[in-house]
Length: 492
Image (cartoon, rainbow, N blue to C red; front, side, top):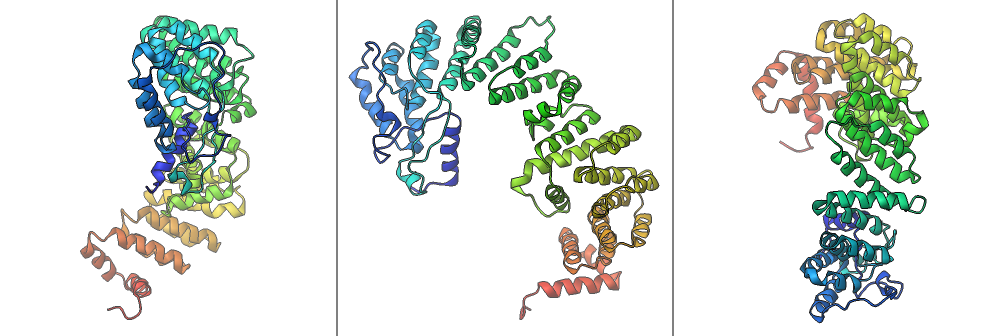
């Protein structure tokens, strides 16, 4: 069977989420995880013979089918035989079955289930082997993935027990956390802390005020950096759902290095989507700088605005760049003086130049003179792109005045950048003017690219395109040249 990319992604994702694949007969030799027998610390109940054959079949399933086989087997085990089934499994490799069986058992007999779980040496980190035919075809046999089976089983057990005994589940989670301070692993700490936070808040008297700032302060004290980051993000998101501005102010009050350590990245915009534009602009821009923002990424953002396609490897950063500009534009429309003062105080870098151009584009719709003044102090190498943003916004207010101003720009690079931005900004609303503007673009490739986009957009209205072309001899000649370049030699 050929392994599709979706099949492979599912297998890899399963490992990343803590799903451990059982080895196949074709897997690596004795170093196999399931070749390690569970330690016999005390006599264990024996699994009835009727379940041994199905278990052997699940163990022989190819790695890509292992999860399904083990889960089916574990759900088929009768309640009375769960303890014997768990005792028959290998705690180093049979994670799929263990997570299902412990989740079932904790609802039936929580005391026995937790006691048995604590007695088993289920590892915090495990090895996933790829040994079936599908993975071998991709040169993956022997590949490994790290996951956290022990912590994930704890999480499954707590949430499962909470369905039948919420108070007991919460009490046991709090007991584990208090008794194992300093010894609890990162994955276990995260699962327990998240459960306590979520279910503890749900159990709080609805009349009592919540204290998310205290939850965040407690999360900051967690020793494991990964657990700390995830817990902070989750708590911050819930706080933002209740009071987005308060959560944003708390975040912005953190020292810069702590804020950068959160690594909110693309989640920042989702968490603070309801925050005031001023706070959102500050959070998004500080996040971009904290994660590192390059001139190349700024350029890619402008290229995508120009319709040149998406860049998957920079998708999240580019989206955050655009969202920060949108937040600043909204802020400028509400309080331009404060927004400009904030922008002026920003560090001198490519991001500030980009945002200055976007801000100028907003101001140019009401005051072109003020917009032009905003760009006076920008570095020469960043001025063309910023002026292009200004022109794109100004075109929406007064196309003729903007075109006349741009025509007087002495610097060829700046003038060229503006002409492209102007033509793109109105190619849908006024294709005739866009085509006339395109004639001023001296770079043949860029000129023809814009003209092609304009004419492609008029495919649905050939009569309208013909009328535009017939009304302007220069446009007619330019489009004829474009058509000739696209027509293969010898074609009719």
